[in-house]
Image: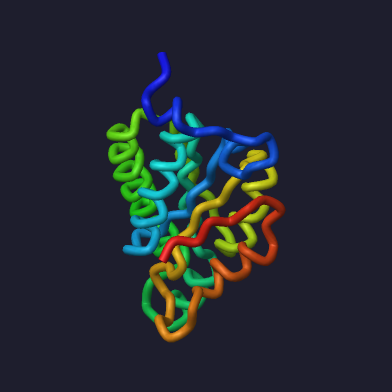
Length: 161
């Protein structure tokens, strides 16, 4: 059964939103990621797309923090993984309000590189990211990880401010 919204949307074959079937949203616990996740869920709802919610444990940060503190890399890695699982569970719970299919994924590495690689591996049609993540300096127009994904991704990237 079609909804009123579906009846009013006409999609030409080359339109981006008409061919979306898989969306990936990168999350890190920041406000920008929360806004991006909401947009990804809304697009997923409109396009009946699966949404991959991805949290990347930032290994370079762990090494840097470990060198500057009394906490071992292993301890920090464990804390990041526990926090990442908690964040992913929160987004998975929030997605239920949208009636969409989601998959969560926790990985490790340089976030921008991992998001680009995962988008290719998963065959996503759209990446949704916040303009600034948890470590962003707000004076620039876009965080460095987001900028690297925009420049390196092979699919469209939707940046949410």
